[in-house]
Length: 224
Image (cartoon, rainbow, N blue to C red; front, side, top):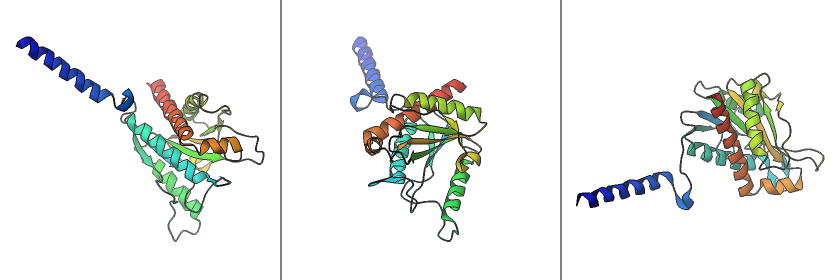
């Protein structure tokens, strides 16, 4: 009787462990590697500001789709996530004399909260030549942590994009006016027909998001 009870307990423990560690398909539900980390995900543009456009593809819409996938993946790692926007709108008030300036100022205010550890601003690019394509990452000038973070994310992006450009210090308001370490990531060029098609595909957006999150993980491991 005692032996049956013993084996029954072992079986229950094993089942409980399987339920905790796996979901459909045997994938891990959450590993908490980013537990306690607070991250702002800034989805560039929004509202009347569509950003780059090509045919029926709008940058602001694709930015948000990628940002939401990044948020989901980060939360599965235990991170706290703040989104600058979750829909098709900007952050400016109706009475704003310059919607773009007020929108950017409010994004910066969200990032500069004391509890924020880092931020990622997600964008898409465009260029007069349709041949130009690929991912490019910009970090805060003089911020060695930002440069390190960019290097880890770029390394992960190599498995997603066939062209990852050299990381650069970027002269952008959202980088210049923020305290926490952060990056502006151009996930691709809408002006390149092949890349535009990819950027509109959910699977490719998910690959980009996963590369960003894997790079963030590697960055925090390196800081330990």
